[in-house]
Length: 144
Image (cartoon, rainbow, N blue to C red; front, side, top):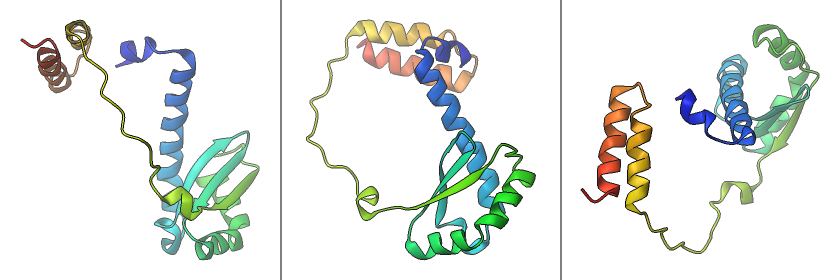
């Protein structure tokens, strides 16, 4: 998998690393929140010592603001976010909840060459189920 990631741009690799870091922080922090907030608050970002958390309603945001200082201390100690300086709390707006609407796209044509590239990529994967799935996809794309 690392060989696949190495073929992407530096910016994309940094983005993937940041997403993985956020997922890890989210798992730990969700467990540290009171039960009443666990399903209503999520980590949106972590940057320069600021943890951005988004609540799905104003009541959850208010409850989180009320315990913010306790959370700051607890997250530093138990989530090992030693550089945490502040928690920014936002309320998710209804427009953020709605799915974006866009015009349907026409599918991009897939050439047999893409299938060949997929087969070559499958040869670099060490996970047998993933390798088999990639080979089946490659066969479909090559029109074998």
